[in-house]
Amino acid sequence: LLGQTGKLTKFHDEITCKYEDRADSPFLHIFYDLDSQSKNPPDIENFLRSRKADEKNPDPSRLTPVLVRGDKQLEERLKHQIEHAEQQKQKIEQMEQKLHDLQKKNEEAKTRQLRLKSQHLILAHRVLVLLGQVECIQAKGLPLQTTEENFRYKLEQIQKELNSPGVYKSALNEISATLMQETPDLSGAEAEWDPETTEKMQEFLKQQHEGITHLVNIINEDMADAERLVKHLDAQLYQGRRFKQ
Image: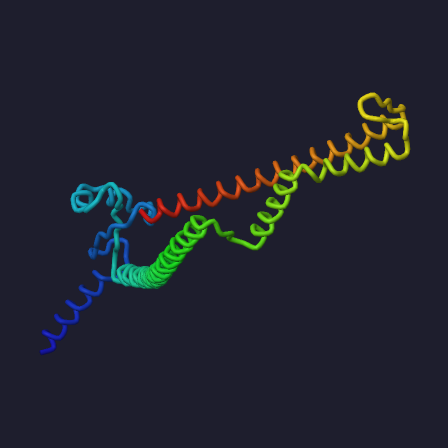
């Protein structure tokens, strides 16, 4: 019994000796790191370059073999791998959270897009209805706004004044009668007016001419404004018809 115990003890010591962290430990294992993570000790470079390590390399273009000797190095290696895996797990969780936030924002954007599209359709329908009403009002010759009605009234009054030349003619007749009363010697075509009377007549005619010219300019400006208003309304109607089609 003592002999068997001694053999077991010796066998245990031999196994323990093999797994101790010694330079000649027979327990060897090769791991593979990314090139950016590899930190190979200089004393094992020749071993890492051996054919055995290279043949088992799953991706020589990206991975570098790393030698682990003894139980302690293996434990440290596993510890580092667990820490690295935990870091990767945290990064994945962060990415999943960001992805979830992006998906939520995407759904909110889709909902907002649908709401805006619905509002756009409602407003487009209102514009079409309004354009139809404007076209009907224009077809009837009715004004669209109060300012347009006032503008139309002023134009009609100016037109009436221009169509009634008696207003200016009567003013000229009154001036002629006044001059005849002040100068009894003036009679018909044979009458000769003095320079002062002629100057007054010319001044009066000049004022009348300036007044008529000013009126014509106002009418032209008003007509230009009216044409621009009509063109603007026609353009809106044309756009409304195109949108409706």
